[in-house]
Image (cartoon, rainbow, N blue to C red; front, side):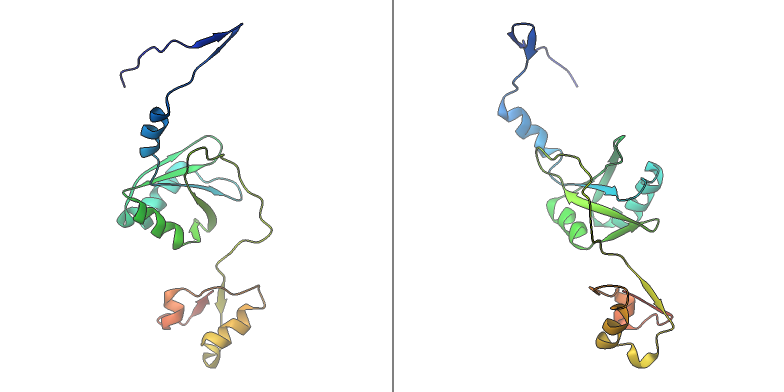
Length: 165
């Protein structure tokens, strides 16, 4: 970076700056394909989050992972489609902890929302084969909460040692 000096405005003892709108518009370009994430519980070490994210999203267009001191992680993607695909394919677990993801936008306030409900993946073991269908799994999973989805291996019955709901 080759920084320049711009004269601030003086109002009494205060100084203020007012960069032109195009400065923000140019800055926006660097962040437009970015997801911002955090963990509901205690944050994980950056190196672990970086390794997991690169492993699961590297082939989906993830370019870079960044973090700040408040436990927010920034995932920069190659394009908007890659960013949207990852966001829509969630929820995502990192070391068995739920990562809450949001699309970055200008003036985003980094705050951790409070949740009364969150989606979680549950493994259901010892399911009788006759209940290994949409209706049967729905009944069984309802004991835990409102069932939303099953993973692809459960749906295709490629792994029948447990159902992931």
